[in-house]
Image 1 (tube, rainbow, N blue to C red):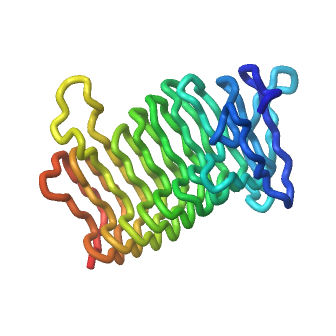
Image 2 (tube, rainbow, N blue to C red):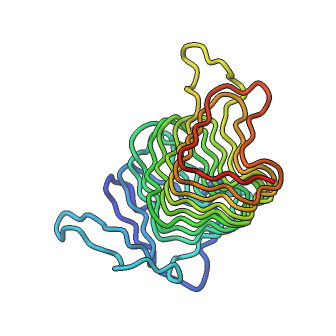
Image 3 (cartoon, one colour):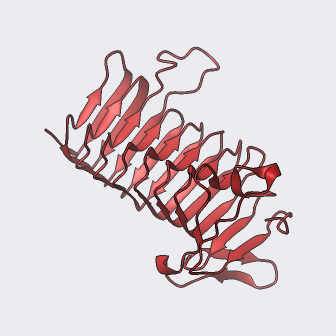
Length: 275
């Protein structure tokens, strides 16, 4: 990362049988990799990401996604794999297997749109954590599994587009969103020990001016199966919209609105089968 200090720099990481697990540089601890400028691309082997270049036009890293080639990022137990600071924006991360980190990717951009795709995020505590006001395009092939806390934790005020993502065997909650908007399409959540999704901001149940807007979750053509707790919980203020989706095999409720929650739950051509 120390040589990629200009906007539009491209960092290509080759596949290796040996995980990248270096100790973070002290000035940037606990972050194993930190973007040094905006508009950069961090790309691993096996990614189908198109990389724009000035002299060679658009270069396709691979014609198809190949997770077996993803370089492995394995931070120390209390460290973050990839960090995007609040003053960095329009970053791209594609083609990595991130393992056993405190936080796999921590995005805190204030503005812009960051792009994540072609990723597997295994174990650790939190798969991806979002804060700040930026938007996120997570539009293809992200697989979360075996986090002890949360797969995707959203405290950001922007909009997340989540498509073709899977969440499996999460010990806590697959998705928790306290602000902003998540638009999820073709997402599959299965075998979460806790709740599938938690939506709501309990700190501001009736927000006055200048408080964060209530979170919105919009799910389309998605499934939540075999959650140990509830499939979806509305906890505080927030809105949920399910379209052509299914919740099945929940340990307690298909959908639960906790006492005192405000907002709305809208179902359209969806099937709920709590137990």
